[in-house]
Image (cartoon, rainbow, N blue to C red; front, top):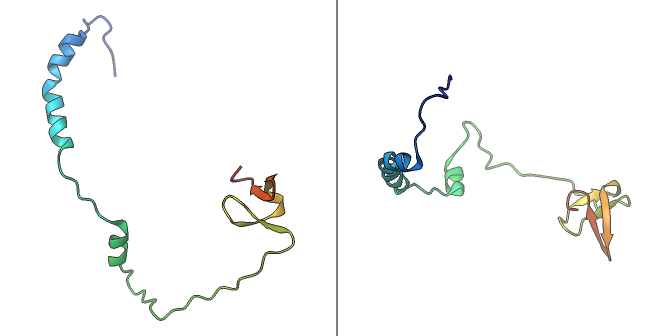
Length: 98
């Protein structure tokens, strides 16, 4: 877009007079009520087509913490020893939490 640098500029006083109507319009738009929906309620009401998982059961094999793993004292996730950043007393902190 071309700019005419020789054109007279508006003062702050002139621009404030022009924008009063705009500000009133913005105030009315901002005061308009908004619908506040609970995401959990919306998600509960949504069903995937053909996906009846009511009879399904999850089965996960849980392994105990291995010798080369540790539990982060900040995020409480079990991580590999290569992820150790530092030790604060008896608490081990991982690289992501440091």
